Image (cartoon, rainbow, N blue to C red):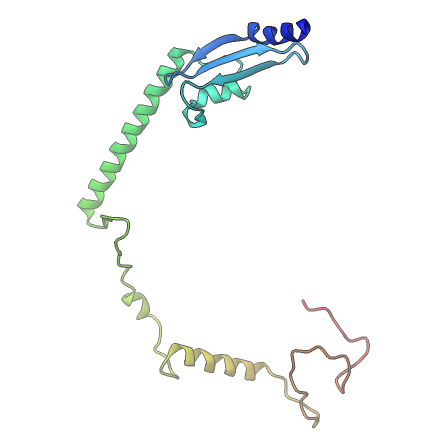
Length: 184
């Protein structure tokens, strides 16, 4: 029993406090004597919320960084992130102003509103009107039928055409041994 207690107590004694982030999460590490590897973990301030861990600390926890991030480094990175956000907002504003000056931009006021598409009348004028049929479907069906008739080989024999079925057949007047080719 004393050995078990010594091992449990040793686990807590060997941990070392590494640092804390701005949300109050605390980071620890300890050296494992068995596999001589450093174990790293976080103790959350409130509830366990992995999204509250900054990227720099995640990299340290995963072993992608050898040294833990310093408070100065964290402050510098936070300031850089704020500058990037301000630059993005400034660029969006400049883009909207430019589009307003040019008059080419359409502003979407709400997500659910309908927005008209581009005017295609000039594009459609380049195509000739349908020559046959009142509806496009009829015209396309007629065109398909004429294309099929153009490519049909003329039958030389006077044999009646075999009925077209979806069922496979292996015999009949058209069967020739050794002529089958796989579909390409």
